[in-house]
Picture 1 (cartoon, helix red, strand yellow):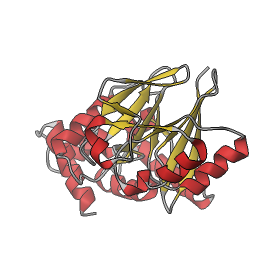
Picture 2 (spheres, helix red, strand yellow; picture 1 turned 90 degrees about the horizontal axis):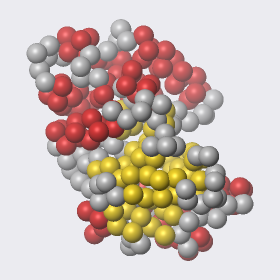
Picture 3 (cartoon, one colour; picture 1 turned 135 degrees about the vertical axis):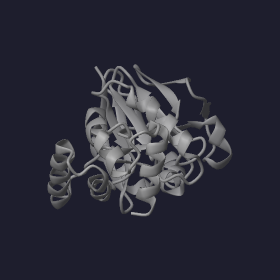
Picture 4 (cartoon, one colour; picture 1 turned 90 degrees about the vertical axis):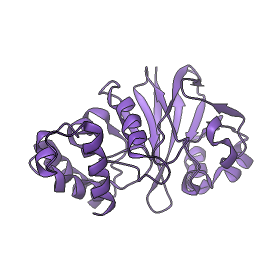
Length: 255
């Protein structure tokens, strides 16, 4: 048995995720961009809600929390380091702490960079990680608070997970991210294929999130500073992976 994952589009381009442990029926929500579509999804399935897992403090990930709590009485879980700017937490966690959705056990990863105190929830047996605005589909979050080195360390933690891990990230930015990726690694055939598939999904209004880590490793430039093509295109053949990553992120900021 494993986690059943429901992707819930919210606002203009956010995603929340409902994760239900199939063995016990315990149900969690990861991030709350807005309450209405989440509550509608729960109601349509006849599900209650036990837990709300928060990844970071930005309004477009937490602003629906009060309304969802009022309707479900779910307990709120988030980073201890971020507790001062999150909704009131029932459970405050640090990196390495465990979080259970029923029989599904997850571990907290500190993935600071986009913000300081941003966390991801990794469920190894369920081969699922909730990354929000750290590792994203074909991208990574803009560095509002952290350093290039912090984000590279965070991405490196996730890059070594099982390639079959499902990456549940926070936004529908994939088409724009694909355009940038093509600017730094245009000869990547896996990327070329993915960009076509993204266009097809967008045309059908089908989410491009979640994605497999194996696909991110093959196509996401922020996980590919080792790529000879990227290094040649950036004229950084002899630089460290961390320095190449930093230059990729700078270029994305100005793309």
